[in-house]
Amino acid sequence: MKSIKKIVLPITLSASVLTLGACGNGSDNSGETLVETKAGNVTSQDVLDKMGNNEVAQNAFQIVLNKVLKDKYEDKVDTKKLDEQVDKQIEQYGGKKKFEEALQQEKPGATLEDFKESQKTSKFQEEFINDAVNVSDKEIDKNTKKGSHILIKVKSEDSKDGLSDKAAKKKADELLAQIKKNPDDFDKIAKKESQDEGTKDKNGSLGFVLKGQMDESFEKALFDLKDDEISDVVKSQYGYHIIRADKGEASKKEKDSLKEQYRQMKIQKEPKIIINAYKKLLDEYKVDYKDKDIKKAIEDNILNEKALQQQQMQAAQQQSAS
Image: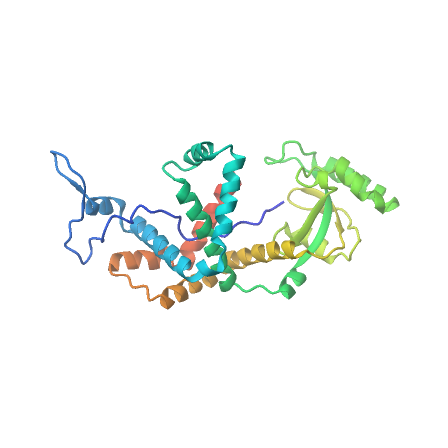
């Protein structure tokens, strides 16, 4: 099924410009010498020139944003608890040395302290998004439905183990006939016959589904059902489904997760929500760009709705390819 995608932040965390000094525009400073050679020295300004304004702007903006978010949300986040969670992860890896080796494989040069800091930064960003995009319990209740399904795949490039369209439809019709005779057999049939590997072992349970998460035809069929009702055979891009609407209210933990997913969907649908929230936050902290080229790069490539949409599309394509 189509999966919900995590919010794509405008840029990725990097500390590479923390020690590089000022950009060239508006400054005659050649920069701090980083490397000396008989052929000539390498200065921080040389590195900045090589990186280019866009890359410098991305790193500079992320560093500024992280500083601002930490100042605003550190008192609201239990950072001690986050450190304890990392310590548990270290134990699960078999100790600090093995954890750091795994960390190096994933991100060469990263330290344990970098990792701990990134966990805190993620939590600060989560708090910021919660403030920026308000989601009420009423919205969640209106836009969620608990359901289960049985999938018979149709063969395609992405589904080599599927049946022909005709055979898949025939099998789905036969299973529906069995279920209509005895609706209580739905779970048993789902576990035995469904070709959705992600749900078959859970008797076909999808848990709570948000509007906008699933294939359009599937979603319409599910949300049209009353509790315990079972659909006719429904065709989606994946194959043929038999869908059941399930009873049950979301727990607090489930509702919090649904709210987070719904926020992400809102931002993907309307990126200007998060762009405006960033701008408001930066105004609150009186962020002043001293370099006009860097300011332009941030406005054009980061605090820009089209640029954010493009990055979201690229992230989605990478996720699909992986």
